[in-house]
Amino acid sequence: MAATAASCWKLCSLLLMCLIPLTRAHELRRGLELADDATTARPGGVTVPVHFSQAFYVVNLTIGTPPQPVSAIIDIGGELVWTQCSQHCRRCFKQDLPLFDTNASSTFRPEPCGAAVCESIPTRSCAGDGGGACGYEASTSVRAHRREDRHRRRRRWDGGHGEARLRMNATAFSYCLAPPDTGKSSALFLGASAKLAGAGKGAGTTPFVKTSTPPNSGLSRSYLLRLEAIRAGNATIAMPQSGNTIMVSTATPVTALVDSVYRDLRKAVADAVGAAPVPPPVQNYDLCFPKASASGGAPDLVLAFQGGAEMTVPVSSYLFDAGNDTACVAILGSPALGGVSILGSLQQVNIHLLFDLDKETLSFEPADCIWRQCNCSCSA
Image 1: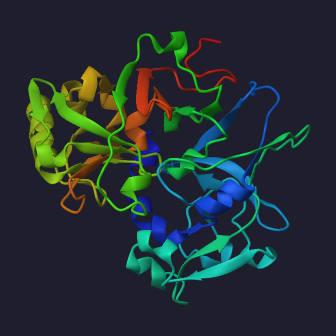
Image 2 (image 1 turned 90 degrees about the vertical axis):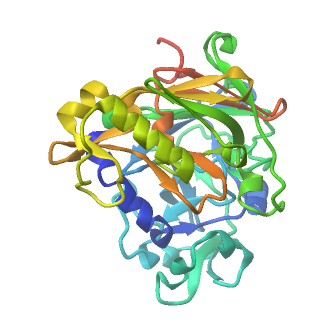
């Protein structure tokens, strides 16, 4: 994880300039099909392999007409499937599959900056290719991609609450993200495959919360939770009433907290480490320490949610080797979050998260998330 984390925020700052939206939610409902792997499918459910690429967790799909294999970032809270395009990406990061060739797809078309889909993309992205287009959209079927594409069975995915949930007429989905530095696959479970170990008896459960935001806003499509407090060492940081909502994200690598909470957490971690912070060796990190001091003193973080559920974020999931014998905290503050924090994917490593869409709850438990072609909380 150390090798990839140092460049994470550099990549994050380029993400919306490089990545291209390929299909809207209503087109996913109409056209998204998944190829089941016979070794991982269950009646009514399917398991999708996920791998880590640079700063993001991605799946391999085929898109376009004729189909092209691409890597796409998992985003459980968005309406779009994101991938990199060869003709419209100036500073793409490295990926295993070729970049999507827009010139070779008959269903590719530009989406102008004035379109509704562009509202969620920063203005700077509109000038990313010099042509005044913020992104590109393709109304085309999308299928899971495997190196050996035999005995393919297709199921249609049906859209629902918070779209990259991609509900395959399912009432639940889950995922378990393996540490990036293992080089091993993770897994996304849909339908009947979405189960925690031991029927989730040892899991924490917290309800989704609703907001009063407009139906088409980004928050209305996201999974939001009530975060009551964060514990770091001997410190307990109570969340303010106006800033106690946190969004669970798979497309944002690093956790971002509302400013007041971040300042308190920053102090708590610094007090626990007991060493003076040092200047960050890479851009966008804020709190860094000499590696020797940080590794022995940094505390685990405990996120206390509504209903008593507690999620432990170990030191290894938020403190990263940034080079120059320096360790940096991969949690940031932002004044622009509007009272909503974000739980990033790197802080969800080795935690199995189950989203129950009927009960509108999130359940979670610690797990070994390296995928072994079974539920990643099992021991096979």
